Amino acid sequence: MALTKLYDNHGRHINYVRLAVTDRCNLRCFYCMPEEGIKYVPKDALLSYEEMLRLMHLLAGMGIEKVRITGGEPFVRRDMLYFLKELCAINGIRKVNITTNGTLTEALVPELKAMGIHSVNLSLDALDKGRFFEITRRDAYDQVMGTYRALLEHGISTKINAVVMENKNIEDLIPMAMLTKDDPVGVRFIEEMPFNGEGSHYETLAWNHRQILKHLQAHFPDMEKIPDPPHSTSYNYQIPGHQGTVGIIAAYSRTFCGTCNRIRLTPKGMLKTCLYDDGVFNVRDIMRAGATDEQLKATFLDALGNRAKDGWEAERSRQFGLPVQESMSTIGG
Ligand code: SAM
Ligand code: SF4
Image (cartoon, rainbow, N blue to C red):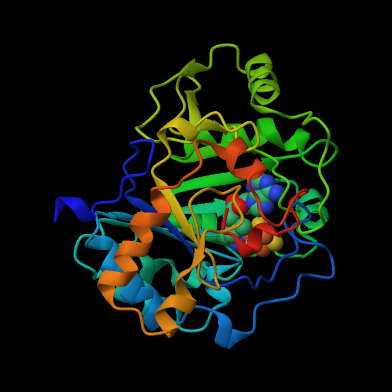
Protein backbone atom coordinates (compact mmCIF):
# COMPACT_ATOMS: atom_id res chain seq x y z
CA MET A 1 0.00 0.00 0.00
CA ALA A 2 2.97 2.32 0.56
CA LEU A 3 3.12 2.96 -3.18
CA THR A 4 -0.31 4.57 -3.17
CA LYS A 5 0.64 7.25 -0.62
CA LEU A 6 0.65 10.73 -2.06
CA TYR A 7 4.12 12.21 -2.59
CA ASP A 8 4.95 14.83 -5.18
CA ASN A 9 7.97 14.96 -7.48
CA HIS A 10 9.75 17.18 -4.92
CA GLY A 11 9.37 14.60 -2.13
CA ARG A 12 6.60 16.48 -0.32
CA HIS A 13 4.05 14.26 1.42
CA ILE A 14 0.44 15.26 0.76
CA ASN A 15 -1.99 14.60 3.61
CA TYR A 16 -4.37 17.55 3.36
CA VAL A 17 -7.22 18.33 0.95
CA ARG A 18 -9.07 21.61 0.65
CA LEU A 19 -12.49 20.89 -0.77
CA ALA A 20 -14.52 23.83 -2.12
CA VAL A 21 -18.09 22.54 -2.00
CA THR A 22 -19.74 25.43 -3.87
CA ASP A 23 -18.79 28.64 -5.66
CA ARG A 24 -21.96 30.37 -4.48
CA CYS A 25 -21.80 32.98 -1.76
CA ASN A 26 -24.10 35.39 0.06
CA LEU A 27 -21.37 38.04 0.53
CA ARG A 28 -19.47 40.00 -2.13
CA CYS A 29 -16.08 40.60 -0.48
CA PHE A 30 -14.45 42.96 -2.92
CA TYR A 31 -11.09 41.11 -2.86
CA CYS A 32 -12.87 37.90 -3.90
CA MET A 33 -15.82 38.72 -6.18
CA PRO A 34 -17.06 41.63 -8.29
CA GLU A 35 -20.11 43.48 -6.99
CA GLU A 36 -22.38 41.84 -9.57
CA GLY A 37 -21.14 38.40 -8.54
CA ILE A 38 -19.71 35.73 -10.82
CA LYS A 39 -21.30 33.28 -13.25
CA TYR A 40 -21.99 30.36 -10.93
CA VAL A 41 -21.37 26.78 -11.93
CA PRO A 42 -24.70 25.06 -12.82
CA LYS A 43 -25.81 22.81 -9.95
CA ASP A 44 -25.46 19.57 -11.94
CA ALA A 45 -21.86 20.51 -12.76
CA LEU A 46 -20.93 20.69 -9.07
CA LEU A 47 -19.42 17.59 -7.52
CA SER A 48 -22.32 15.83 -5.80
CA TYR A 49 -22.05 14.82 -2.13
CA GLU A 50 -21.83 11.18 -3.23
CA GLU A 51 -18.94 12.02 -5.57
CA MET A 52 -17.14 14.02 -2.89
CA LEU A 53 -17.57 11.26 -0.31
CA ARG A 54 -16.28 8.65 -2.75
CA LEU A 55 -13.23 10.80 -3.41
CA MET A 56 -12.60 11.43 0.27
CA HIS A 57 -12.81 7.68 1.06
CA LEU A 58 -10.34 7.03 -1.70
CA LEU A 59 -7.97 9.82 -0.67
CA ALA A 60 -8.15 8.76 2.99
CA GLY A 61 -6.87 5.38 1.75
CA MET A 62 -3.95 7.28 0.18
CA GLY A 63 -2.99 9.00 3.44
CA ILE A 64 -5.15 12.12 3.45
CA GLU A 65 -5.87 12.86 7.13
CA LYS A 66 -7.10 16.41 7.08
CA VAL A 67 -9.90 18.02 5.05
CA ARG A 68 -10.92 21.67 4.96
CA ILE A 69 -14.41 22.46 3.71
CA THR A 70 -14.52 25.81 1.99
CA GLY A 71 -16.15 27.53 -0.99
CA GLY A 72 -17.89 29.91 -1.86
CA GLU A 73 -19.78 29.85 1.36
CA PRO A 74 -20.14 26.19 2.44
CA PHE A 75 -23.34 26.81 4.39
CA VAL A 76 -25.29 28.11 1.41
CA ARG A 77 -25.18 24.58 0.01
CA ARG A 78 -28.25 22.59 0.99
CA ASP A 79 -27.85 19.67 3.42
CA MET A 80 -24.31 20.67 4.34
CA LEU A 81 -24.67 19.20 7.84
CA TYR A 82 -25.54 15.80 6.35
CA PHE A 83 -22.39 15.94 4.21
CA LEU A 84 -20.18 17.06 7.10
CA LYS A 85 -21.42 14.22 9.31
CA GLU A 86 -20.65 11.65 6.61
CA LEU A 87 -17.23 13.18 6.08
CA CYS A 88 -16.41 13.14 9.79
CA ALA A 89 -17.24 9.42 9.85
CA ILE A 90 -14.69 8.42 7.19
CA ASN A 91 -11.98 6.15 8.51
CA GLY A 92 -8.60 7.85 8.35
CA ILE A 93 -9.85 11.45 8.20
CA ARG A 94 -8.67 12.76 11.56
CA LYS A 95 -9.52 16.42 11.16
CA VAL A 96 -12.42 18.08 9.38
CA ASN A 97 -12.06 21.86 9.40
CA ILE A 98 -14.30 24.51 7.91
CA THR A 99 -13.68 27.98 6.50
CA THR A 100 -16.83 30.09 6.62
CA ASN A 101 -17.93 33.69 6.44
CA GLY A 102 -20.03 33.00 9.54
CA THR A 103 -23.23 34.61 8.26
CA LEU A 104 -25.31 31.41 8.45
CA THR A 105 -23.28 29.46 10.98
CA GLU A 106 -24.23 30.57 14.49
CA ALA A 107 -27.27 28.29 14.93
CA LEU A 108 -25.30 25.31 13.58
CA VAL A 109 -22.39 25.58 16.00
CA PRO A 110 -23.75 23.06 18.57
CA GLU A 111 -24.17 20.48 15.80
CA LEU A 112 -20.71 21.18 14.42
CA LYS A 113 -19.32 20.59 17.89
CA ALA A 114 -21.33 17.40 18.36
CA MET A 115 -20.17 15.87 15.07
CA GLY A 116 -16.52 16.56 15.93
CA ILE A 117 -15.54 19.41 13.61
CA HIS A 118 -11.92 20.03 14.57
CA SER A 119 -11.66 23.76 13.92
CA VAL A 120 -13.29 26.68 12.17
CA ASN A 121 -11.67 29.56 10.33
CA LEU A 122 -13.94 32.55 10.34
CA SER A 123 -13.38 35.25 7.75
CA LEU A 124 -13.65 38.68 9.31
CA ASP A 125 -11.73 41.60 7.88
CA ALA A 126 -12.93 44.45 10.11
CA LEU A 127 -14.28 44.96 13.62
CA ASP A 128 -15.79 48.24 12.54
CA LYS A 129 -19.31 47.62 11.26
CA GLY A 130 -19.14 50.27 8.55
CA ARG A 131 -15.85 48.97 7.18
CA PHE A 132 -17.20 45.40 7.32
CA PHE A 133 -20.07 46.56 5.09
CA GLU A 134 -17.74 48.35 2.67
CA ILE A 135 -15.59 45.26 2.29
CA THR A 136 -18.29 42.57 2.09
CA ARG A 137 -20.98 44.77 0.46
CA ARG A 138 -23.54 43.13 2.76
CA ASP A 139 -24.98 43.99 6.17
CA ALA A 140 -24.07 40.82 8.05
CA TYR A 141 -21.67 41.97 10.77
CA ASP A 142 -23.91 40.97 13.68
CA GLN A 143 -24.43 37.45 12.35
CA VAL A 144 -20.67 36.95 11.92
CA MET A 145 -19.93 38.21 15.43
CA GLY A 146 -22.69 35.92 16.74
CA THR A 147 -20.91 32.98 15.11
CA TYR A 148 -17.58 34.08 16.59
CA ARG A 149 -19.00 34.13 20.13
CA ALA A 150 -20.84 30.81 19.62
CA LEU A 151 -17.65 29.09 18.39
CA LEU A 152 -15.72 30.22 21.45
CA GLU A 153 -18.57 29.33 23.83
CA HIS A 154 -18.69 25.80 22.40
CA GLY A 155 -14.94 25.39 22.66
CA ILE A 156 -14.35 24.92 18.94
CA SER A 157 -10.81 25.87 17.99
CA THR A 158 -11.22 29.13 16.08
CA LYS A 159 -9.09 31.27 13.84
CA ILE A 160 -10.00 34.56 12.25
CA ASN A 161 -8.82 35.20 8.69
CA ALA A 162 -8.43 38.87 7.80
CA VAL A 163 -7.19 39.99 4.39
CA VAL A 164 -5.08 43.13 4.80
CA MET A 165 -5.96 45.89 2.34
CA GLU A 166 -4.66 49.41 1.83
CA ASN A 167 -7.42 52.02 2.38
CA LYS A 168 -9.87 49.38 3.61
CA ASN A 169 -9.06 47.89 6.99
CA ILE A 170 -5.66 49.04 8.24
CA GLU A 171 -7.36 50.74 11.22
CA ASP A 172 -8.78 47.34 12.18
CA LEU A 173 -5.49 45.48 12.44
CA ILE A 174 -4.66 46.50 16.00
CA PRO A 175 -8.22 46.02 17.38
CA MET A 176 -8.28 42.61 15.75
CA ALA A 177 -4.92 41.65 17.25
CA MET A 178 -6.37 42.81 20.61
CA LEU A 179 -9.05 40.09 20.35
CA THR A 180 -6.27 37.69 21.35
CA LYS A 181 -6.06 39.35 24.77
CA ASP A 182 -9.12 37.66 26.26
CA ASP A 183 -10.06 35.11 23.57
CA PRO A 184 -8.11 31.92 22.79
CA VAL A 185 -8.24 32.71 19.09
CA GLY A 186 -5.67 32.78 16.30
CA VAL A 187 -6.01 36.06 14.40
CA ARG A 188 -4.30 35.67 11.03
CA PHE A 189 -3.54 38.55 8.70
CA ILE A 190 -3.39 37.48 5.05
CA GLU A 191 -1.69 39.19 2.13
CA GLU A 192 -4.20 40.03 -0.57
CA MET A 193 -3.97 37.70 -3.58
CA PRO A 194 -5.06 38.42 -7.18
CA PHE A 195 -8.16 36.15 -7.11
CA ASN A 196 -10.83 38.87 -7.11
CA GLY A 197 -12.62 37.70 -10.25
CA GLU A 198 -11.69 40.93 -12.03
CA GLY A 199 -8.26 40.13 -13.42
CA SER A 200 -6.69 43.07 -11.58
CA HIS A 201 -3.99 43.33 -8.94
CA TYR A 202 -1.35 45.76 -7.72
CA GLU A 203 2.07 45.94 -9.33
CA THR A 204 3.52 45.68 -5.83
CA LEU A 205 1.65 44.77 -2.70
CA ALA A 206 1.77 47.63 -0.15
CA TRP A 207 0.74 45.37 2.71
CA ASN A 208 3.05 42.41 2.30
CA HIS A 209 3.97 40.18 5.26
CA ARG A 210 6.93 42.39 6.21
CA GLN A 211 4.82 45.53 6.29
CA ILE A 212 2.09 43.81 8.32
CA LEU A 213 4.69 42.64 10.84
CA LYS A 214 6.23 46.10 11.08
CA HIS A 215 2.81 47.61 11.75
CA LEU A 216 2.04 45.09 14.49
CA GLN A 217 5.47 45.43 16.08
CA ALA A 218 5.11 49.20 16.21
CA HIS A 219 2.04 48.75 18.42
CA PHE A 220 3.14 45.62 20.27
CA PRO A 221 6.93 45.97 20.68
CA ASP A 222 6.99 42.97 23.07
CA MET A 223 5.23 40.65 20.61
CA GLU A 224 7.16 37.37 20.57
CA LYS A 225 7.80 34.92 17.78
CA ILE A 226 6.41 31.50 18.71
CA PRO A 227 7.16 28.20 16.94
CA ASP A 228 5.20 27.59 13.74
CA PRO A 229 3.46 24.20 13.57
CA PRO A 230 4.70 21.85 10.81
CA HIS A 231 3.31 22.86 7.36
CA SER A 232 2.02 26.11 8.81
CA THR A 233 1.30 28.80 6.24
CA SER A 234 1.48 31.49 8.92
CA TYR A 235 4.35 33.09 10.83
CA ASN A 236 3.06 33.02 14.39
CA TYR A 237 3.43 35.46 17.27
CA GLN A 238 2.06 36.08 20.73
CA ILE A 239 1.64 39.27 22.68
CA PRO A 240 2.80 38.57 26.27
CA GLY A 241 -0.15 37.92 28.57
CA HIS A 242 -2.58 37.32 25.72
CA GLN A 243 -4.52 34.06 25.44
CA GLY A 244 -4.56 33.88 21.66
CA THR A 245 -1.98 34.19 18.92
CA VAL A 246 -1.37 36.39 15.91
CA GLY A 247 -0.37 34.99 12.52
CA ILE A 248 0.78 36.50 9.24
CA ILE A 249 0.20 34.59 6.01
CA ALA A 250 2.43 35.50 3.07
CA ALA A 251 -0.14 34.21 0.61
CA TYR A 252 0.99 36.49 -2.21
CA SER A 253 4.72 36.38 -1.43
CA ARG A 254 4.50 32.58 -1.24
CA THR A 255 7.20 31.95 1.32
CA PHE A 256 5.78 28.60 2.49
CA CYS A 257 5.67 26.50 -0.70
CA GLY A 258 8.66 24.35 0.30
CA THR A 259 6.64 22.49 2.93
CA CYS A 260 3.27 22.48 1.15
CA ASN A 261 1.28 19.35 2.06
CA ARG A 262 -2.04 20.18 0.38
CA ILE A 263 -4.09 19.75 -2.76
CA ARG A 264 -7.35 21.45 -3.71
CA LEU A 265 -10.57 20.31 -5.33
CA THR A 266 -12.74 23.00 -6.86
CA PRO A 267 -16.57 22.92 -6.84
CA LYS A 268 -16.63 21.52 -10.37
CA GLY A 269 -14.03 18.90 -9.62
CA MET A 270 -10.73 20.36 -10.87
CA LEU A 271 -7.73 19.10 -8.99
CA LYS A 272 -5.32 21.92 -8.20
CA THR A 273 -1.90 20.88 -6.95
CA CYS A 274 -1.15 24.56 -6.25
CA LEU A 275 -3.37 27.52 -5.43
CA TYR A 276 -1.76 29.41 -8.31
CA ASP A 277 -2.13 26.73 -11.03
CA ASP A 278 -5.22 26.63 -13.22
CA GLY A 279 -6.13 23.03 -12.53
CA VAL A 280 -4.45 19.79 -13.43
CA PHE A 281 -7.32 17.45 -14.32
CA ASN A 282 -11.04 17.25 -13.82
CA VAL A 283 -11.77 14.42 -11.44
CA ARG A 284 -15.56 14.84 -11.85
CA ASP A 285 -15.32 14.15 -15.58
CA ILE A 286 -13.20 11.08 -15.02
CA MET A 287 -15.61 9.75 -12.38
CA ARG A 288 -18.65 10.43 -14.54
CA ALA A 289 -16.94 8.60 -17.42
CA GLY A 290 -16.87 5.51 -15.19
CA ALA A 291 -13.33 5.45 -13.78
CA THR A 292 -12.61 2.74 -11.22
CA ASP A 293 -11.03 3.58 -7.87
CA GLU A 294 -7.72 2.20 -9.11
CA GLN A 295 -7.83 4.44 -12.18
CA LEU A 296 -8.65 7.46 -10.04
CA LYS A 297 -5.77 6.70 -7.68
CA ALA A 298 -3.38 6.36 -10.60
CA THR A 299 -4.51 9.74 -11.96
CA PHE A 300 -3.89 11.47 -8.61
CA LEU A 301 -0.43 9.90 -8.35
CA ASP A 302 0.37 10.93 -11.89
CA ALA A 303 -0.73 14.54 -11.26
CA LEU A 304 1.47 14.81 -8.19
CA GLY A 305 4.40 13.44 -10.15
CA ASN A 306 4.34 16.66 -12.18
CA ARG A 307 3.76 19.26 -9.51
CA ALA A 308 5.20 22.76 -9.71
CA LYS A 309 8.00 23.49 -7.26
CA ASP A 310 6.24 26.57 -5.91
CA GLY A 311 3.45 29.05 -6.54
CA TRP A 312 5.62 31.18 -8.83
CA GLU A 313 6.36 28.24 -11.13
CA ALA A 314 2.68 27.20 -11.03
CA GLU A 315 1.59 30.72 -11.97
CA ARG A 316 4.06 30.89 -14.88
CA SER A 317 2.79 27.56 -16.21
CA ARG A 318 -0.88 28.54 -16.35
CA GLN A 319 -2.43 27.44 -19.65
CA PHE A 320 -5.18 30.03 -19.40
CA GLY A 321 -2.60 32.78 -19.14
CA LEU A 322 -2.18 35.81 -16.91
CA PRO A 323 -3.44 37.85 -15.21
CA VAL A 324 -5.38 35.45 -13.01
CA GLN A 325 -9.10 35.87 -13.77
CA GLU A 326 -10.73 33.59 -11.19
CA SER A 327 -12.65 34.53 -8.08
CA MET A 328 -11.34 32.89 -4.91
CA SER A 329 -14.87 31.53 -4.41
CA THR A 330 -14.17 29.09 -7.27
CA ILE A 331 -11.01 27.88 -5.53
CA GLY A 332 -11.65 27.98 -1.81
CA GLY A 333 -8.63 29.93 -0.58
N1 SAM B 1 -16.77 31.99 2.10
C1 SAM B 1 -15.89 31.43 3.05
C2 SAM B 1 -15.12 32.50 3.77
O1 SAM B 1 -15.09 33.63 3.30
O2 SAM B 1 -14.54 32.17 4.80
C3 SAM B 1 -14.95 30.40 2.49
C4 SAM B 1 -14.36 30.69 1.13
S1 SAM B 1 -13.25 32.06 1.04
C5 SAM B 1 -12.83 32.06 -0.66
C6 SAM B 1 -11.82 31.36 1.84
C7 SAM B 1 -10.79 32.36 2.31
O3 SAM B 1 -10.20 32.97 1.19
C8 SAM B 1 -11.35 33.47 3.17
O4 SAM B 1 -10.69 33.50 4.40
C9 SAM B 1 -11.08 34.72 2.38
O5 SAM B 1 -10.75 35.82 3.19
C10 SAM B 1 -9.88 34.29 1.54
N2 SAM B 1 -9.74 35.08 0.32
C11 SAM B 1 -10.66 35.28 -0.64
N3 SAM B 1 -10.16 36.06 -1.62
C12 SAM B 1 -8.90 36.38 -1.27
C13 SAM B 1 -7.88 37.19 -1.85
N4 SAM B 1 -8.06 37.80 -3.01
N5 SAM B 1 -6.71 37.30 -1.19
C14 SAM B 1 -6.52 36.68 0.00
N6 SAM B 1 -7.45 35.90 0.60
C15 SAM B 1 -8.63 35.76 -0.01
FE1 SF4 C 1 -17.88 34.89 -0.18
FE2 SF4 C 1 -15.82 34.02 1.20
FE3 SF4 C 1 -15.47 35.18 -1.21
FE4 SF4 C 1 -16.28 36.66 0.83
S1 SF4 C 1 -14.30 35.56 0.68
S2 SF4 C 1 -17.17 36.67 -1.24
S3 SF4 C 1 -17.50 35.27 1.99
S4 SF4 C 1 -16.47 33.27 -0.81
